[in-house]
Length: 184
Image: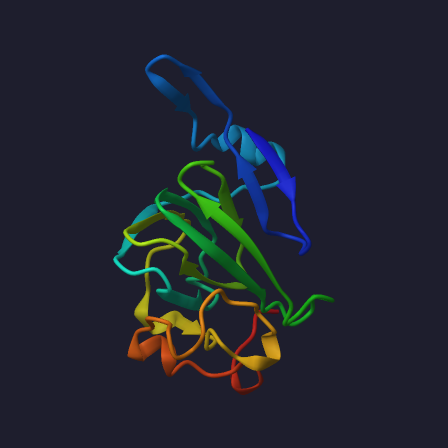
């Protein structure tokens, strides 16, 4: 597995090596020892999966507060997404900055999102399935988020607010400047 550093300290792009023949291909999608060798020590305990029917579906930007903060390992099983992370670590020199990575099932790359980041994505295709591992259980009392289209974040989403499919819950999330909580 190839591990690629990104523009923010913490998130990583993981590229599993595919071994192909006339049947198709095989890849190891998770190796704890490989990730540990690059400093990812998370013990993943919950797997989640979402299916988005329409292109332009936005999910996020979500996080869980400490004691239940989640690191995630995100991959696309069908379709493609623009995956987005926002640095919410108050002591970080990149606080409030974001990065985007296009993930798709054809390439099989994954995004590691550590504690201290909000995470979300926009589907680029219809019938997009996303799976991710978490190192903490979902805890509704600890969930938080930042509204996906906060202008202060400057994220170049591939969909307009008028065309995006967004849940009422996600549309009501606060802007970064209104957030009552940030990570240390």
